[in-house]
Length: 267
Image (cartoon, rainbow, N blue to C red; front, top):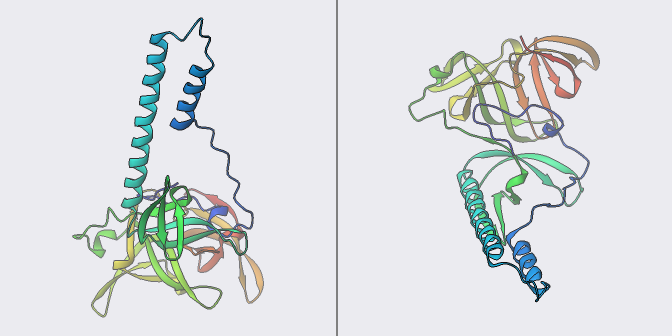
């Protein structure tokens, strides 16, 4: 899994829907049950005329004890990690049972529960394992004493409800440099981008100050569609706009689908 604490994962195929099913490699690690069974089998089939040396048996029992302790620590750590995500917004992968497609969704972690040896996160009507978490939006550097003015000139991430191409709304992650702070009906808003597509975001929706931006601030070349005509676009990516199925970059007054980007260079 990838965690955002000042960073987002690079935008690649994981930012849009993938129509291939996820292939998981078999677990190659030997658990404590397998280790114990192996030891019992070794004792069962040892040569009675030449039994295992006591020191060898003690060494293997010590290994078994150490393995069990490491397993318990790993389980406790996994639960602690899961509990720390409750209330946070995450991006996660989900195998849709109806379509068979692997989807990447955004949602808030509502609860944590244990099912057998697995720790599950509850997100709406979905329950996922920890290895399905792609990124966690961590608001640790936005404190109760922070103000919108503290973000001026910095790159931030926010989660907003925004319209999508399908006529509905969905949780959307935006990342961009704060150029201005505006008070709208007494509520502080930050401004990302310039021109017709500048974006006003309530400061309360800001989740994170980004130390190392993903694409924001980079020189990008690609194409956009204007009145059905494809045109070449190049310039600085002023902000990133990521939804479940599409990611857009705001470049030189145009919203460019990330799939239509041909080049990204650091400035």
